[in-house]
View 1: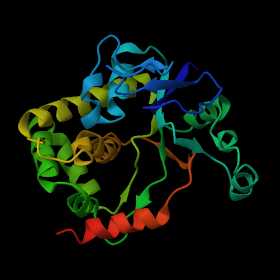
View 2 (view 1 turned 30 degrees about the horizontal axis):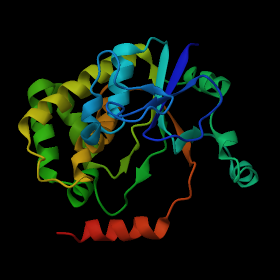
View 3 (view 1 turned 90 degrees about the horizontal axis):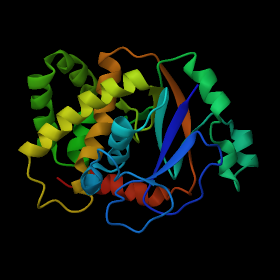
Length: 256
């Protein structure tokens, strides 16, 4: 299998040695060369990275990369199938925990798409969580656009938004045919939304709006198209600051 998994990054970082993993400098236009492939060649949206996050790398791959299977991960996050013992044994060398090409090939024989295990929000729905963390009017406008462009997706959209579990990080691996269909769908929605909303007064975090929305919309696309999913754990290359994450959650929850 000709598999390429993009590793989205904005800085120099330790990268996997296996050539299946393709580091890509997202938001590369006008920035210092990191020695990685940039998302600013060919047909690209590199300059929109502050709003689209890793999706500028995704768009570049859609328009410029030839392969049979394609995936996306991040310089800090990779798919892993490691058990707790293996994780404990390799806590100082987490690169040994990420999926190999052989492991991914075997997984793709069992499914249509590899995704991270869902996060359970327990006390709030996906819709209410977005409203607590971001600007709900943008999600409302997104639903309106989907109802106009892809009305057959509305029931799946509602199902995802009323639920409490979500595949996050925009991470996946799938075949190129499905990838092309997904990109055609997601970018047509996001580009239309970009025309309709004003984010000029958003802070830098909230300006990452299209990255945030796409995490939700990937789930909608998966549900509507009834894709067979294989869920995998995600290993973080850096230690997670849980107290900070909890404080951020509480702040967002009671912001309004």
